[in-house]
Length: 333
Image 1 (cartoon, rainbow, N blue to C red):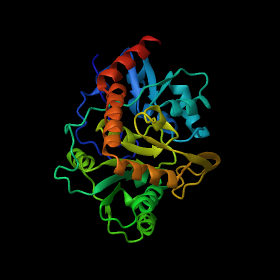
Image 2 (image 1 turned 45 degrees about the vertical axis):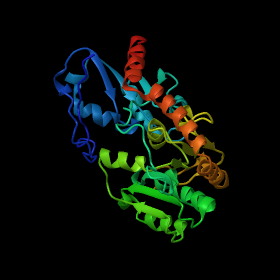
Image 3 (image 1 turned 60 degrees about the horizontal axis):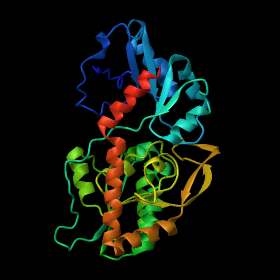
Image 4 (image 1 turned 60 degrees about the vertical axis):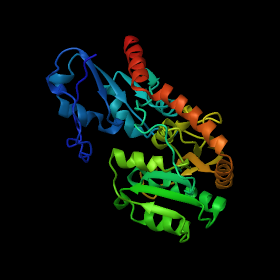
């Protein structure tokens, strides 16, 4: 199927971060067709205004939406009159959208992801490297939602100052919440076996980072999908993650180590997810620490979970699977 693209980043006042945007220009495709609109609900009217009536006339409009809480804010309803159906990257997100869009078809379509170039991976080629745990977050995506301080505390509870264990916390966009770095440093308590990395990495740099990891740790409060969890699984790395929200579509006791939680009101100092009437997860730090200790003590367990995770991730996230699923959904209309 021919695919075209239109980059609305500047029109919607977003940073243009993807310089390799290389689709053939879709503005010239008039008449019938399908528009996949990767724009959140409140911004749909603005996006369509920039696309123009001439382009969108006779098009079937599919909104790819994602949200990280079990209920969706009322302002997302602003986009509903302009779309024919919704596609969401997880069952969790799909159920959230049903709270405001019960009159629209809503389907689950996981994000497509290519397997990483480095495989098989060997994070400890000489047998002397420390047991390495990796945490990755974008502070602009809500520091409180990503909850790295809980991950740091779980690592500290599991290993203390043991130099044979190493935690890497990779973050970006600290400008979005300047207090974040101080909070992470407070949680680390000056531990020398914890490394903070705030630089922006290209794809090769991110792959190098994953290649060092024995475990990926994500004690998120909520995920609409769970990209870091999926990326870790795709690389055959065992993942310890909160057993709630979007990542539960693929992280199970057979493919990783889900961590229990309690539901608490959603409070977000950055105000993106400040919805105290809605709940999100507070992961069990003690359980996460025990999972980390078990994985360090048992390389065979790490290998088995990593292989199962990779197999599951390739099946769910391959571009081929995405294309086949998309064609089936389009045939339903």
